[in-house]
Figure 1 (tube, rainbow, N blue to C red):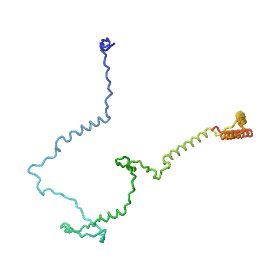
Figure 2: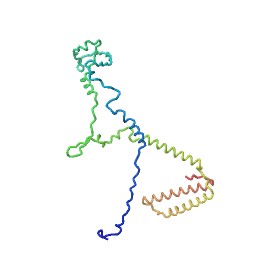
Figure 3: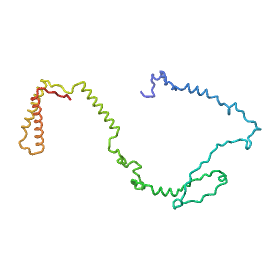
Figure 4: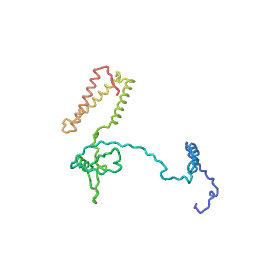
Length: 263
């Protein structure tokens, strides 16, 4: 049916679904904030305090009527040093004293600082800077310093390079202690060795002899001439397996009572 044709289902008014809004967020400190705001709101509604009365117009401020009491500061004596004149530390003539300094009972003698001599000594004692590793990465002459960018492997020069960090050692030690504690707990619950019964011993002997017979048959079917490396390796592997099985069979037949470990 096209959109222009009428449809009876559009004549029936559908009820609107109400929109359920979540509850508004209310702070826990809402009441305390409103109480504090209302209590401090009417403290200073006018310009200044109501109890303070302004001065009369006739009592204006006159010159030298306000007394300012300044704190007393005593003079200190500095230790004097004898100065020797040389090329790096020349002695300059003293400047003329002011009238206020002449009237003072104790004269403060300042120690002159020779910045020229200090700069010369700093330059002599200064360590020359190391050359930076620069790389030109464009044809327009853009230079990039690898040390500042972080592309130079400076971590190789550290003292702890190639060593296990302390926190890793602590974690490994903690895991080893937990494993040892778990092994001790299992040993306390279950004994590490158990007695091998006669039926199990006979079953092991039968299986080992059957395996030995199969390996021996395979060994007899080997070619007489071992002229390649794979043939030599196969023959050596079969001989090693036969010797191990013979040792195990001899051990089981020699000792009637044996204790084995399940792990």
